[in-house]
Length: 315
Ligand code: MN
Image (cartoon, rainbow, N blue to C red):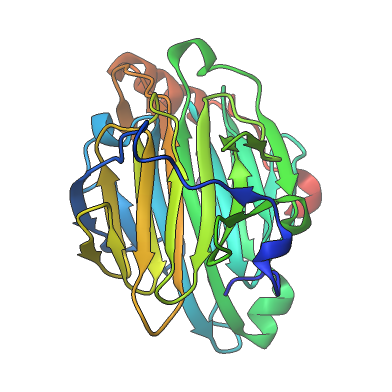
C-alpha cells in the first residue's frame, strides 16, 4: 500500500498551509475506534461508522468499511454476491488486489490498486462485488475501502449511474513541504478538483504522510470533517491528540485540519467531509431512505424485481 504513489511529491501542485492568523483550525471533537465486523460472503471489515458515530455526525456519509488488508491463500478471497441498493451511492477505493463488479444497469468493471468505483444506486440497482477469479485462484492481498454517501430526498430516485475512476486519474497533490502525498478522489481541495462526480458535495482524499511530517490543509467550513487512520499512528489537531490505526477522528467546526504522522512509519489516512443533508435517515440493510414507508416500498420493489435483474450473461 498504496498503489498510486510518486517518488518526489515536490513535483506536484502544493496545498498551501492555512494561515493561522486568518483561519480557525478545527479542534478534535472525538476519536472513535472502528468496530470489527464480518460482511458479504465472509470478509473482515473495520467499520468506524455507523456505530460510534451517529448519522447526524457522519452526515452526508452513512458507512465506512475498511476491507482488509487480508493476505489470502488460493481459494480464500471472498466478496459480496448479488444484492440490491436504493437511496444512496457506494464508493469503493481499492488499495491492493483485484475486485470485479457487475450491476443490473450494465455498469461494472475490474478495479486494480488505486482505482475507484463509484456507483449511484439511486432508484435501485442490483450488483455484486467480488475478487477477480484470477485473484481467488492464485490468492493474494486484498485491501480496499467502501464509503456510502447519502442522497437527499430529491435524489433518492435518481437513475442509477456508474463511474469507473482509474488510479491514474486521481488528482495528486503535495503538502506545502512535500512531506505528504494527497490523492484527491472526489470533490475539491484547496482549489483543485477531482475526477469523481458527486451528487452530494463532498471532499474525499487518501493521504500518505511521511514519518514525523505534518499535514495541514484547508477544509470547507460548511462541510463536516473526519479522518480515518488506515495504518500508522498520528497526532490529530493542534492539541496533538494521539490516534492509532482504525481510529476515526471527528473534527469540530473551523477552516482547516491538521494531522502529524508519528515517527517510524508512514501514516495512511482517509480525509472525508461533506455538506450535511440534514434529513431523517431510515436504514434497513442495503436501503437508505427518509421514512419507514419508503423502506417497505423498497423491500416490495426488490421482491417484485423492480430494482433490476441479474444480467443473464453473468449467471
Ligand atoms: Mn453493495
